[in-house]
Image 1 (cartoon, helix red, strand yellow):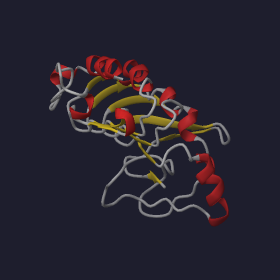
Image 2 (cartoon, helix red, strand yellow; image 1 turned 120 degrees about the horizontal axis):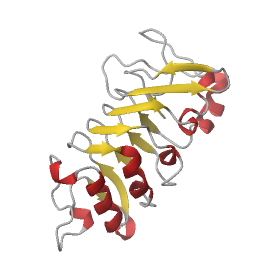
Image 3 (cartoon, rainbow, N blue to C red; image 1 turned 180 degrees about the horizontal axis):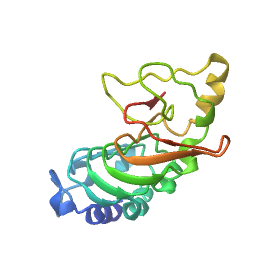
Image 4 (cartoon, rainbow, N blue to C red; image 1 turned 45 degrees about the vertical axis):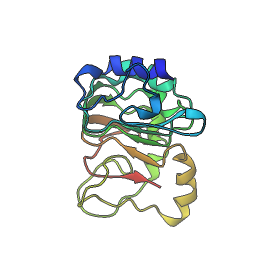
Length: 193
């Protein structure tokens, strides 16, 4: 995992990070690197690198992230990541449940693996039309996603992959194959179970 983290550091211009304490330093265990949390056996379970000056293509960094087989949380919001949201992050690492890529410079269409089940979601709250269920995190004026009672279990199964997904603050579009509609991902909505 050390090699995967070092490759990630290199791919996202690690020398310019706001805080890269411990990253790649001889004799410093991975558990002591800034933003890295490890679990049992010293395996990486979380990367908390939000608002840390990361820059570069998320698509180029994704293969290194995917090598972290025990990763459960990936917090990359508030950086300068570019390109599309890589579809492999919806499948690998297999334990990934929390993903924050908000407030970056990501563009393109959200891969279908991230939008499963969205066509039937309903939103109630403030604001205009937008894609229900994907988007931003802790905003005071964030709209609350309310699932219709009879759809709740089905929707939870469809979104069982992620308990937290934040894609707000990017230029991403969601495409619903079931409805053949395209929508811009909202800046202030939340998917959280």
